[in-house]
Image 1 (tube, rainbow, N blue to C red):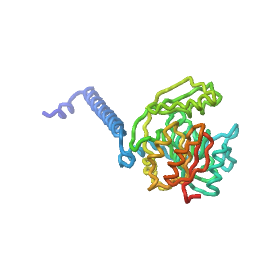
Image 2 (tube, one colour):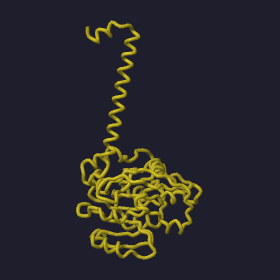
Image 3 (tube, one colour):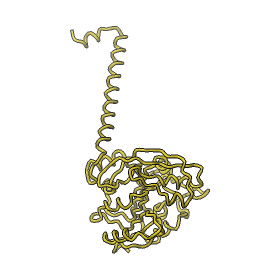
Image 4 (cartoon, rainbow, N blue to C red):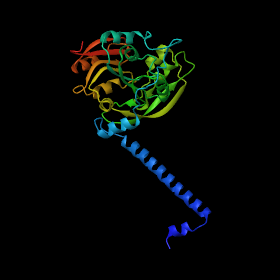
Length: 302
């Protein structure tokens, strides 16, 4: 007599127990599969070449968030933004807008996006000229606030790799709610392996850093984001990534992607002539610096 026949003629309580065991086994199998997928994703995320199909697939599957379809949730001062309102912006953002003039529907990548509003170099372009793009922010607290703003852009809670391959890094996430500008403090978060604590900024603005949190963050080469989004022109590339900007610039695929205007945070008391020289060799004209940011325009794109 088969096992099934035995069960078939068994009391109802046995049927219930048997079905319960089947459900438990199925659940455990499902959990095991999920853990295996997570482990596989974790292992696959290490040292994949930026151009790799696997790196692109991993980014698209697990680390890219599509543009919001909700109404903007943005305030300037005490005023809630509505479509058509004037956009308040800092001098740098205004300068960027003046360079692009009346250009509509452009594409930007802003790394170090914070909450998507504070000191944003791309927001004015999005709200006034219908630009879209990608916002990258590794700090999980800032990224959560970024999502709440409902920007019409792709977003990613990752960091740009300073190498030509994917990697994990430890982010030293700074915070101090007692500071007059906690967003500025959070924006000074840095990668532990680079040992970049921007003492110049800390001293200059009297930051009172009281909290450090260590967060493991996935990083992708910039080319992986670009290939995942299938774009060949980046009108504005804004890099504010606390010390790895020059390494990232060295990895960019200038020969296949048209980066029109590049804005790089590079804090120093003196003009960085080496950076200017390197960008000139890559085909970029130096426009200006304000001791914290350097701006370069691709030759022939004025």
